[in-house]
Image (cartoon, rainbow, N blue to C red; front, side, top):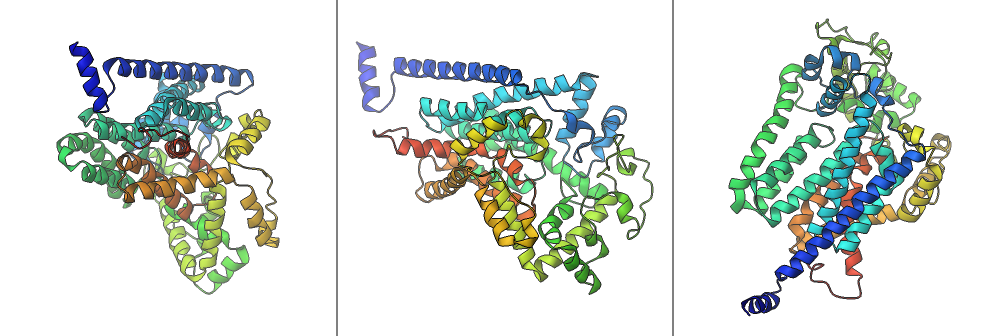
Length: 502
């Protein structure tokens, strides 16, 4: 009798009785089990289709320390790393140590583990944001079996780990807002710190913006936020301070000048840059393509003294590719940056061309990326189907020779290469985020992490660099799914309290 009265009271208050809660939890478990089974089955099928983990980047990617140095001079190579944040090279060095001669299998095993974390985290994120279980499961399934996800999961680079860490961070953010506990802030800020120390696109500023926002939203819970924030903040800031003390740069990467020069210098033809050099506007360094070998800079730069530290003195890696962590590239990047700013103000149309190209590339499907080609050629037809049906890309051909001869046609052709559904999804997310904040919707604080991260990475990634912007976007795509789920639920023919955030 008492149990029946309690159930009636809970019903009047809008609470689920214990049996209903248990049923809901059981259903959620079945959805998760189904998603994990789908994950395993899809990986097996893709493996049978010939997809193998591609670790060919290990020996020659610019962002990676020479594997020989990671094996023989690991600690110093990490400490004196200035061109990149340290997390990826730390990971590479650990796997090389733990799996000698079997490092590809070690990387593959770790990335499969990240895939499992991605699957669980994305589904739980959607559910904690009040997306109905079938919709949450469907959206998660679509992402984890997509050719794009498979390609990045089987490629040795920091893109996939950052994607997983962002989803996990978003889940911890939402969990803390629902139930404030120190464990959630610890996991949140450690995962945010991991992202900052993995990819310089996500700057310390982004980390601080989210920390301040959480303190504003839950100022009464500061005693639970500060303990979780303190250590990750000190570790991340410590890396920036280390670069400031050793290299006079308060940054996670000293490449910014070279990256930004592609937005301005590289948008001018050689003849235009030569004219600017002749009239004294820019230096001779801008006549050389950024990220060139040291030999090309030696006639115009003073030689750097030998430091005795291999990762700073090495001109080329054992594989023969340039070592862009050589100490000379700090001054080279600064020189490119100074010229890039001059061109920005003198010839702003060059920057606008760079911006147009960056945004156009941003909305090209992320599987259409040069370094994925080894596996992509095995999934070319399947990828085209996914891109057409889910992203709205109906043309994947681009005549780059038109860039100079007929730029109007080139940019129009570039626009038709984009995914129109993808563009609509980003517009939807940005508008939804603003509406949720303005209306002080019950879910606005939970969605703020997603909205701010999407906006930050879109602006910083596209306004400062051009070339690999669709790869940048891949890490953000899963953060769109809660907005898509919310939109789908708003179209349902029946009202849903969960949709309203009640």
